[in-house]
Length: 271
Length: 267
Image (tube, rainbow over all chains, first blue to last red; front, top):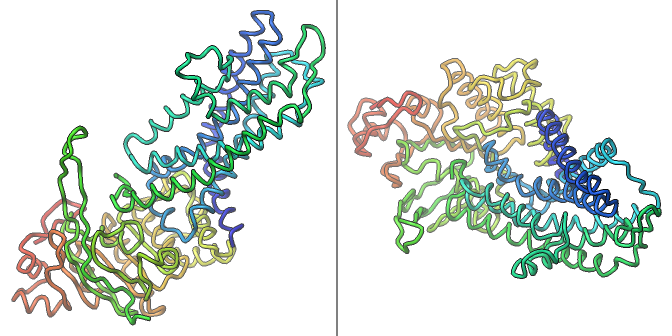
């Protein structure tokens, strides 16, 4: 029963992706080009370590931002389509509903990240031998939980405000981009912003991924020496705790906002 | 267990709006005031009223989409406030706007509904095709995106969605508004047949007096959120001393109904 309902959301989201295929192509090409333009800054500086730092940042952000965005915007999209009321009155728990949405978002984000990686190889000559790629996949998998939780919290914004919710979701995402050290060390941020970096899961996902790829220990013209998974256990533990806190918190906030929107009549299509 | 399909007692709903974001003041608009009515299983009940009279708010409350501020409501013997999830299994709703994923086909939209209602997809597809055929939609349109369909056809897909799960209670919020006469007739014939064959209970909101008189056993008249009169069409006409239901509404509710499609007064 639960599996069929989860598959229902995967079925819907897959067909929506299929029907909007031209947008998917455009966004993927845009992600490849924007990632390449960032990574090429390192190439222009003849600095392989910088190139690797930027490439990993661009790739991880490509995955995490899509994962966050797909979940966060799922409610906004339903508002635009006018289907929100029908989804909310279906006999399916919010847990199953958002699990289905999150599972599709995870698959879609991972698929798109693979295309971005392949696209980057057209622009960059990267020798990834020696990097702990499997370890990076583990980090991505663990960090996904925290991003799903953040996405759930952000998804409530369009429930609360039909007019401004989607915009607020984008602001939320841009703050994550700013504070998480995607393209630069967190230490260059103004002091008043740095505490935000400490509560962003992307900070830990990036820090761990760079160690696993061997960026931190990289010596010019030498092969990469990626760290073993045991070297990033503190980051993994932090991400795990964040996931354990943020996913239930996301569902809790979602439930409260849903109840509030039913009291105030905000579920209505026009708000 | 209650013997009512719907039992509504003293339902009230008020919407509050801040006068300005920096002020503490609120304006209040009552959508429903102390509304009470009931439906027996298998009965068709029509809620009549002009735009803004509270019809859609009542349908939303019964659909678990809006929480009332006062009162008590039961659906199929289940108290709304306590058994929302179970109530959702026994209702099918059609609203005035055929809310759909417009890029998806009728098939994709309906199979999504089937899956979240835990129906076996192949059986649901056969059932959807049978309902659409009965409503006069050609099977070859099943794979067409909704955005390529006429308003009438979209509304027929909306009715199919509501009936796909074979719910004992149908909540129809102006289901024929905006439809051409043939589509209106197709939908009415289908609903009559549905009642006859399945014994479905129907709560219908409408502006169309002919539609209400034809389909409903009893009618309630809503004006400014209050249920001002209730009875069979003949009873209401007798009470108001009117020859038609439109005149009866004018007499009892003290205001005119407005045809949403043409924005013309019909009384």
